[in-house]
Each structure stands twice: as structure tokens, then as C-alpha cells.
Length: 422
Figure 1 (spheres, rainbow, N blue to C red):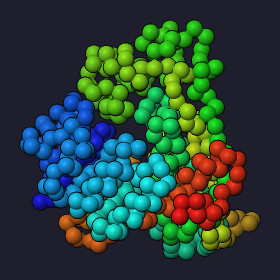
Figure 2 (figure 1 turned 180 degrees about the vertical axis):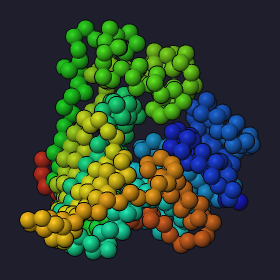
Figure 3 (figure 1 turned 180 degrees about the horizontal axis):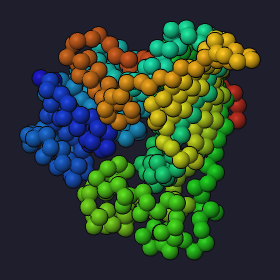
């Protein structure tokens, strides 16, 4: 039986990863928790039957002890990964590390070196690699059905309400406290692009974006600082009535209130960050960003990251010398066009529609695939995973470089950028 401790019992650590082990694995169990929030900590104790000697208020208390379990799930805030990661590796724990690895370039590089130095098994939570949707895209590219890839258009459609929850009101609203948007939200996407291109490295990147809308000057006249006191509560697009009260017991209300009742939610929104007006928060992360990327193999990519979408999904268009692939992960739908094999005047592309397998779990089944891989890795059934730190580093460096380009208005050449940290 694989014995696992959870450091950071938030939405990912408690509700996703620990809950998966509880419900889906007869080969692993949660035996310890480190969490400063007493309500979340108590929920973990009751749900997993954790013994008192393995309940901690902080990661420091957890890691003061000699190694007492096999692996840890490290799901603290972005700016709180490096120190517990370093100490856990020194003590010999295998680790599932929530992305991003760190919000600092130097720490990401050092995490890779430490993992290789101490020889522990480490996985970074790039869940998209485990989805049937993106796995099918890679299979199609590798098959050669569209020839040589020339160009990719990739969109992360964050969704207007998702952005308001997570990046205006929520924990990742301010890059000075956590991470830039492209690192926190989209190291997933940069990782997938690299994976689809068989790990080919990025050569140069240029990015453009700003915080266009969620600003004080766009607040309706006479609006209140807190939503429950505001005269626009029934009409505002971002009203808590629409985002939270309709989702009690599910995300994102699970994050907005520690207790999932209407009464408790109301009390939470009266004072916590999720009850604030979206135009009057201390947010500074961009709400739109476009990146242009050139890979070493000559493939060009445009990546569009935007808050102002209806769907929460990823859409992609992959253009090759012999055909084209289009996909929408929320619809679980892929179209393949093979040039010159169709009918009609110009023998247009032969169209094939593909519906990838369905895997239960969040992120289109990616959470399930990730956790199965982690359990198998820790139990010694495989030597490596799809998402080790060395592999993950490429997407992180791309994200940091993209933000550097956006802020400074320059094209970033990756070799020169990396030389700053050697």
C-alpha cells in the first residue's frame, strides 16, 4: 500500500488528488496532511481517517519529522513550492508537484537539478498530457497523416466567469503575490505544444497583452465595493448569484466558501475575496495575451490566452504539409482533413471526424490519468513519467520568457534568456 501525505489541502490537493486516491485506488492511501486552515484540515482528517500524529498545521511541521510515508502531494501556493520541495527531496520522498514548479526561474532550474541529484521520483501536474483528447492529437501528428507540421494556432479560452473567479477575485489575481497568468494558467498549454512537437525546444518568443477590462474605471456608476451590497447584484455579469449560488457543492463555490450551504456562502461572501466587485479588486494579471512562438524545427505557433470567452475550453488548429487537424477539447471533437483526397472541383480535403475516448475526471480525464501514472511510478511499475521536472522545465522557461517579452516589448531569444540564469 502506497502511503501518501498531502501538503496543502486546497482544491487540487484535497478535492482532486486526495479524493482520487480515496475513491479510485486500492493501492494507495492518504495518511498525513499539512494545512494551516483548520476547516480544510479537519475535512481531511474525517474523510481519510488520518491519525493525530500525522496532522500538521504547516509544511514545516510535516517535514521536521523523519520520513514516515512514501510520497507527498505538494499543492501549496505557487510561491511556496521551492522550500518544501527541496526538503522533501532531501528526505527521500517521491513527489507529485502542482504546477507551476515555482514562480521564479532560478527555482525551477534548481528543482530539476535537485530531483536528479537526490534520485527521487517527481511528477509535475501537467494533466493535459494524460487526456485522451491531446493524446489522440499527438498520435495523429506522429502518424504523419498531415505530413510535416508547419503552423499551429492554439487558444486557451479561459471563460469569463472562470477568469473573474480565479484571476480577478481569486488566489492568482496578483502576479506580485503568485505568478503571471501565462505561467500559472498556461504552462499547461506551452507544455502541450512542446509535447505535440516531440519536445522540440522553443527558439524565440514574442508576447503582447494587458489588463484591459477588470479595472476600476469600468465599474458601473454607483456600484459597491462588495457584491452583496450592490444594486447591480441581479444584473451584473459577474454577480455571485450567477457564479456561486448556482454551484453550491461544486467548483467554484467549493473555493468561495469552506462550508457548502447557502447561509455559509453568504457569510463568506460578506467578507472574503470572492464577494468583491470585479472592477475594484487588487488584481494586476492580464486578461488577454497573445504569444508568437518559433520552435527550433521551424514550426510557428500563435497562442491566444483570453478571459473573454463563453466556453471554458481549448481549441487548436494544426496545419501540416499534407493536411490539417482541428480540435475542441470541451466538445471532445477532432476533425482531420487530408489534402487532395476529397471530392469536387478542387478535390478539397477528405474530412474524418474523431471522438476520442472518454476518461472520467477533471481536465477531460487528465486528472485521472495523472494520478494513475503517479501511483504506478511510486510503486515501481515504471521508471519515469510523462511529466518529470526536466521535461516540464521547457514550458516554464517559455512562460517566463513570454512574460518578459510582454512587459519589456521585445522578442526573447531563448538561448540569450537562459544565459541570464547560468
